[in-house]
Image 1 (spheres, rainbow, N blue to C red):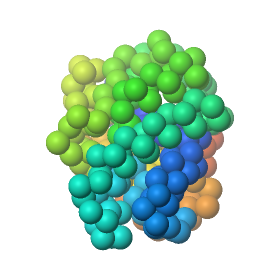
Image 2 (cartoon, rainbow, N blue to C red):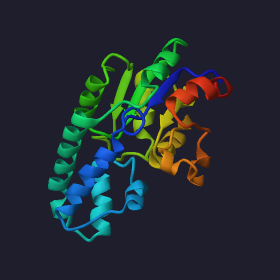
Image 3 (tube, helix red, strand yellow):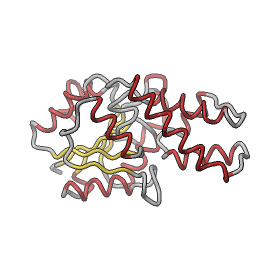
Image 4 (spheres, helix red, strand yellow):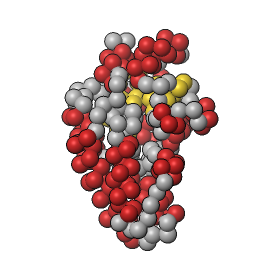
Length: 219
């Protein structure tokens, strides 16, 4: 099959923001007297903030009435931290250029709010790199539901089976596969050898490694 589009997740894939989201989430839960382990945090990577709070509030038996305030605090903290300290992962510009040179359409499909998308794209100088940007912020369901990916494909004018999705999280991988896209995962180094990534079509150590080592065989 001829692929026509490459669709990228944002947090943890294009920008090293997951540790900063973790800080924001941990600081907010600490305000309610709760503490997450790193392993616990990784199980919820890729969820929207609303779903992340709902999950951990239920786990820790925190009143859901306080959820709206907690969601606002996490997003505010994360935007501030990512704007101040977030850095692009190696290969971001390389991989986007790689697909543009092959006349692929380029999309962004993220669980993050558009307010953060604007900050990240400006910080990484990617404001004009994407043909379509979709966020699960206002959707009924976020990742692992596939809607944000399906919407991105529609905005690009392609069908999902013509898309290659790039993800770093398990929930994101499930969303891409549920949308019937090919999925390349770039896991965090500490999580790289976990068998859960076997559902992906390809696993690569970095965006740079994909373009130099894996792309020709995969495409």
